[in-house]
Image (cartoon, rainbow, N blue to C red; front, side, top):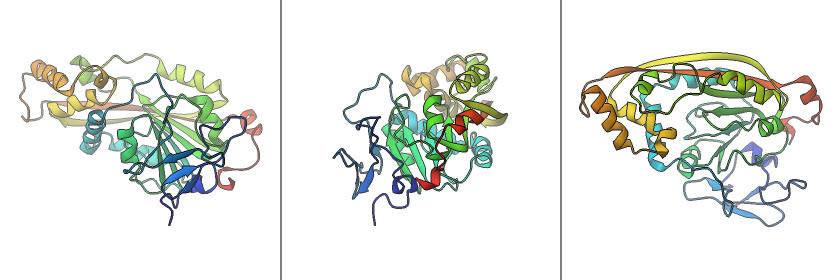
Amino acid sequence: MSFFAGIGLLERGSVRCPQCSPSAPTPLHPRDRSLVCRAGHRFDAARQGYVNLMVGAGTRFTADTGEMIAARERVQSSGLYAPLKTALHELLPHGPLLDAGCGTGYYAHGLDSESVLALDLSKHAVRRAARLPRTLALVWDLWRPIPLAEDAVAAVLNVFAPHNFPEFARVLAPGGSVVVVTPAEGHLAEARELGIMLGQAGDKAAALDAAAAETGLRRDGRSVVEARLETEPGVLADLAFMGPAGHHSTREEILARILEARGATPGGPPTAAVTARFEISRYGLTGSAAGDRPASGPMSR
């Protein structure tokens, strides 16, 4: 049995070689523990099961470190983000899925998708996502053309990650959905009051809708999910460290600032409640954009 058996997107030839010309895209096919194209480009799977398509390619972005990903796992294990996961599973269809900015694969885990292409710039993230069934986990820069054929997926999931709407629209099949999660107003306000997290941009929803509309995606719905958790200083430190602040401060530095502000001690009793507020925006192709596509759907490729 192939190392990549059961991944429908691969079996249909929907995953494309990033080194071949965009004008003549070439499918990647599994061969033992590698992905190869007919032009001879080869990408080997790491021991942990993921494939790095960025070999030999540079990026101006900084990937999340192993320590940041571990902090994210601890936060997800706390249950704070569980209501968001539940809400997403109610929205997403069962067809092939692009998890764009997959992180650990937490939100796709347990989703009955036919197959999942999980993309993240961090190898520490995709090695965790690679453990999920029917999942092809790739190291990839989301601002580059996504290595997928047109109309390849029934849904795109984009949680706290770069929004490459032109590419999302290109790979989305007519009738599919792009589901984007961004911080809602008041998200982690308690942590922000402590000065341990970066500021939150205002009027993000309007800017998101405008960027999507430019690529032929219309907003079909928007909702807010809220969760609240009594927590101790270590979880607060993880919440800050797993995000952009983790590129500027160590977890120990963040924890020290929390303890100083709270007058608490490590491992002490819960010091405060923290509130997570997530805004879920759902987009579909407009009639004109969908009409410009070939008739074939994602399952026929």
